[in-house]
Image (cartoon, rainbow, N blue to C red):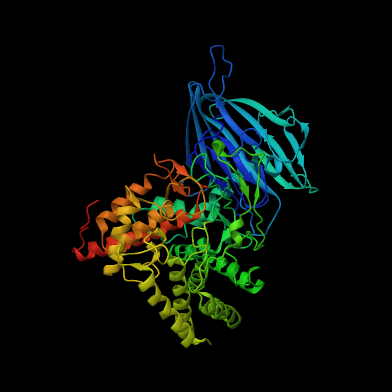
Length: 629
């Protein structure tokens, strides 16, 4: 068991309220309960000694038949059962082949609960395999002690402050105490099975019913049926079916079903540079990220998920504005709570000594004017007209645009949440233009009351301002912020939102400038921190969201050879089960919080755009695909 496996060496399981990461060695090293944004139960990913983990590994026998631990002679492989969130880790040992199947049952109703289950099956398909189990919970990010009660060889209870974890075994697994923790070993032959069930609940609740073999088997069947049934609704039938399906499942796994709010990522504290300080908590709902996901989910046929977030967003507008007087805060907890006080967890050393580890996110208090464009963009993406143009909902949206009419021309912190001071960011202006543009369209199309002369004047003023102050004649490109020559990959969204034609000469020269400065072997940096200081030390990798936006922009610009090549190369950076973190490091390693919803939604939109462009090219060529791979 390696102390800190690579970030990418994990699969994700979840129950649509929280989730867990399982390493390719069979170690569950990240799990928070009862929600994504709750304190951790297992966090060895951030501190191997203090964080806690739940490992099931296979041993290679020594000369006398004694186990020598998981390293000697054991090869592991990990995959998902097709079109599911059921994770399979295979152990290939000199004596046999064993498997651990991990899943979290999805509740029948999306009602918030403090009780969550992790099911871990062990089975042997060839020969004989000896499994070792170690369960070491560390509650509240490893800060809270716990008491162990070993009720018998098949049931243990871990009691921490306000939370209780129950571990039950089925089959030949016999639990024994290991201090305040639990361990077990079990040897299985081909065809034999065993299982353990971890149930985490709030304090004072009734203990779970005894784990029975039939009930455990039903959990597996139900989970597989749920996920295959859900992805079966996907309307995508393009060239990259497997990757798009995996991205859709990942986006679903990262959504808090009781509220409809997606989190930006499953984790906190994973670094953008190994050993660096760019380590943030992404277990919250960003208005920007979630709003952009609405179009992707709708285009895949998942209108219920798209509408659920739009309902979440409407509720935020009903609740009132941010503490600074703005209509919205940039991010919230998954239930809409706006308080995300940032604290440093100094007792955690961080993944491979990448410190500080932060819980909460101080960027919640930043002014980022672009979120109003993304919010209105999301509200306009509706398959059910009454949802977006109901009178009360419309009045709230119109009030947002009236407020923006008075406040769009201000410096802000920008999309990347830099801590280097406010500037007049071009991307922020772009999305303010989107807010007015989509608001005007909705008002006209649905005959709703609106200050159309004012909104139209503000929209046009923003375009004129971007075209004069956001355009650098020297660089022949749109730039990051006014009065600078710094490039910024967020502007790859310009043609996607309709601000500029994808083949406009200004846009094509911007694309060329980005290609020369921000693109490295089809991977795209957000910006150059040396040219535009962001208030933080260290560097970062290429930003995978931007790399997929680059593909999208190339496809829309008609550069299909380049777009397809860049897309296919980008897919090679996915991990072994098709997941992406936030960034790609200089030697191809994944960096940042994992898996990242922003990356997966951009993968989906890039695939859709590239498919459409390739299909169009094939049609113009008389049914032959005129694009070389």
